[in-house]
Length: 138
Image (cartoon, rainbow, N blue to C red; front, top):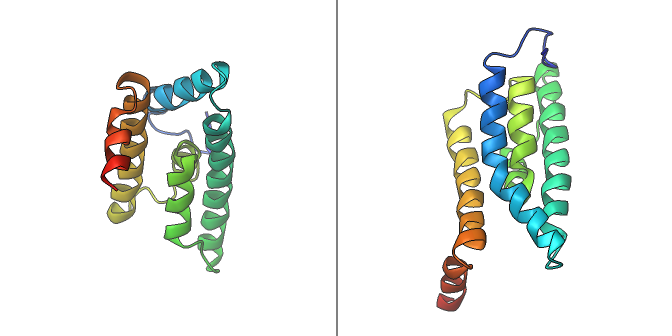
């Protein structure tokens, strides 16, 4: 498979696709479950829209970086990731080879991914006990 950057084959494509699939299993499964049980279509919609937005922002930021133009602030990229766009951001990072080497950026990105995983573990397996405890302490 070719990437959108310079036409070269993406390294470790099978592993990266497997990792993406594993990371998206709970968010997609949980979102579909909430949709099918009539609880809410919002999580599925949020992940889809935010991922498309994140992908587009990464693409735009990469083009701007190449052209030496105004860049998308990292707080905007992280904000969209936090709202559910991290899957699109992860795909864009790999396709465009963008924001993959900046350690401070990657640490916050992966923290956002972990937060999403923890929330879904709580929603799917712990009956939202962690979320309820957090809300009750406020």
